[in-house]
Length: 258
Image (cartoon, rainbow, N blue to C red; front, side):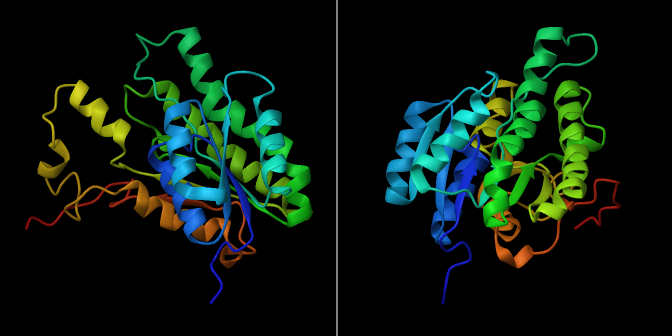
């Protein structure tokens, strides 16, 4: 039985840890090759070494103009073609209306919105050749967001609109563009950030069912399994989809007390 991504070459930004690393591992497990992009060299080299000849590393700062071309060139040098692009890299600055600064806002938009747009622009000619797909990793914060995630929420809202706009515009070229909006995911960064904000080590094991209905937080691996569908031919011909991956409705719910 052939694997779901057999022979496909895929770029994953922000791929050295967390959700990106989980997606990179899943790609290789399903028979694909992956260009792991990131800014942490030690994490990147360790991950790529664990994935063997099916992975290559590209270190590039998405704040810098020209990084999309560098990443696309690295993928072509490593694998000769591009079948998929996962725009996963994101920066998360906690700020509200009072605390937000122009510099912080510009940085968030540059990494979370501008870089994905111009990566798609740089990769598009190559994706046309393979009839490839783009998967943008958004956030349920795109719909409003927490008060302390103002710029981040705005950036993910823009990413969602961009996905639907480009899917509509580029469908005739054979390139599909979809987006998934994760909810609360237990990444290494989320665990570290919550401890830094005052929660006890192991906080995620003691959450109320009102916060996590199924009793355990969603993991990067859970998300990676879902990402494979959108990168594979199984999801053809769907494009312009925005899918929430959360344990409860973003609109609201009436939890049953257990």
